[in-house]
Length: 300
Image 1: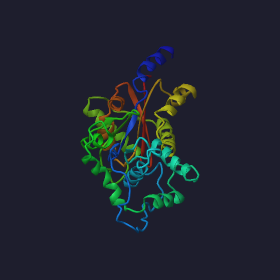
Image 2: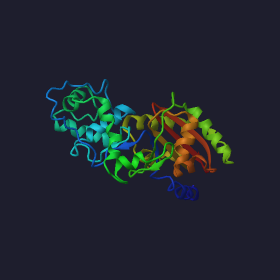
Image 3: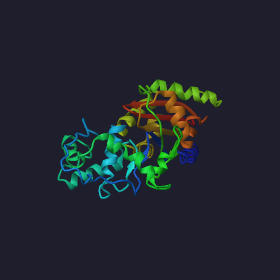
Image 4: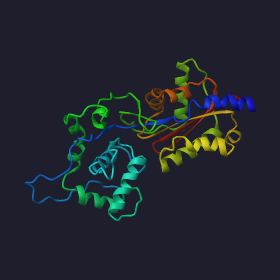
């Protein structure tokens, strides 16, 4: 066991710090982007309802893009000004900052009270106006790596690594999310094209992967901290029954199994190394909402 564990530790280091990509239509507001101030000739303006539903960590797409654009108008609230379409920790903190500054409970979720607050601040313009600011920033003379131009220059379907270690790409969601078995089958089909033996389904790994998927959906990315803690502090190796274990996970838009494997995981070197690693013999998959978690086991 000691030699096997030592061997695992060497392999396992290759996977630490890798976090699966959130696949979203990316853009950011540059520091020289437009600010929001009503034209001087407008004397009276009705308030627009900008959000028809709550926005929070499980939200994706246009509502999150719009929220991030609005938060970006106040550097004290959202200094990073990243517009990703992904409701991550930075967006949650910015919402909490806005809530705190206006005497609203710091839930980190754009609930009814927060939506009314946002309407009162930014409701002089409609959604289309604010959403147009992403493309407008391209004309402001900003050069890479300032956020708006940097993200908008990226081609569709090509992943790149962000400063927080996660991967992202510009991509559209599928009509439905993959099922666990569908994703496992897609991994095996992909391994076959690489000349690697298929993985056997493990109910034990799948059950753990499902708990991880629910946790990540509820709490956001933890940079694999929960997975590492489970292995190192909670006897995870023995509980799962493998000497070598690896994790891939993704959060974001809906993708079917093939697209998760080939559009997302295959585009990230670390994740691709996991899914084609010949030393892994078993796999379990958890799916919850738009979160996928793949746990690989082997080396015994």
